[in-house]
View 1 (tube, rainbow, N blue to C red):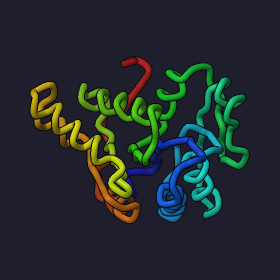
View 2 (cartoon, rainbow, N blue to C red):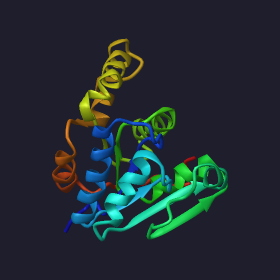
View 3 (cartoon, rainbow, N blue to C red):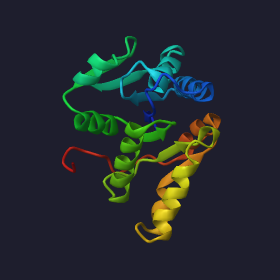
Length: 194
């Protein structure tokens, strides 16, 4: 039985990104759908966020979005999801997304993606969850992040073992086989912690 049933994807909503990142987002959505893994994400229709959801929905998968009231008015929620939940704040949005997923995949993105990544990484470091965090380093986009994390560890602001809390992959094709090999998480993020 497949332990990872639901994956939270963090990624950018900018509609101005290069084609290589757009293709990767759609391919990730398609591969999640084909593997029978539910997508959980920020609920938007723009940029990589919209494309990963399109990849899921166009291939018969299940996509669940969480979006704030403000972002729904500014950017618009995706019209064709299995479920779209409109929530009161970014804090609630991020908590609901993290509670609804068995693992996290980070595609290229901007400051919001970094915020989501570092929060879920910090929660993992603090042992508030043990869900895998996979960085899709498409076209070397996250190379500076990898170097920064190494720097944090080298200067002893984090332990050497903390560097292993993130799994970097270079292609979308690596993600599903990796998810299928990982053990089922035993510690879940819940509102009692945050």
